[in-house]
Length: 95
Image (cartoon, rainbow, N blue to C red):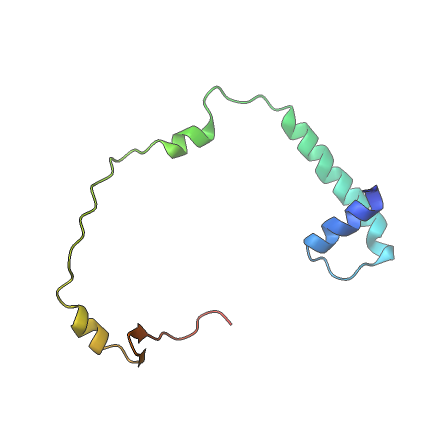
């Protein structure tokens, strides 16, 4: 893919709006600056310990999960404002 097609593709993925040839030069310069920053980032020395490794090491031991029967299930279900059969209906949050 040539540079102009790549630029248009990235602009489309970033949802920058319809293609505007007047903005293409400025967008191209900004894109080149971003690529340069990524190249510079690749030259930064990496620490001995990986940052991701610490996140995967649990600090608190995990407990065993026990299945427990909730004795007041019917009380909660019966108090729910909207039901459809065995389903509980909730208000729509995302339009």
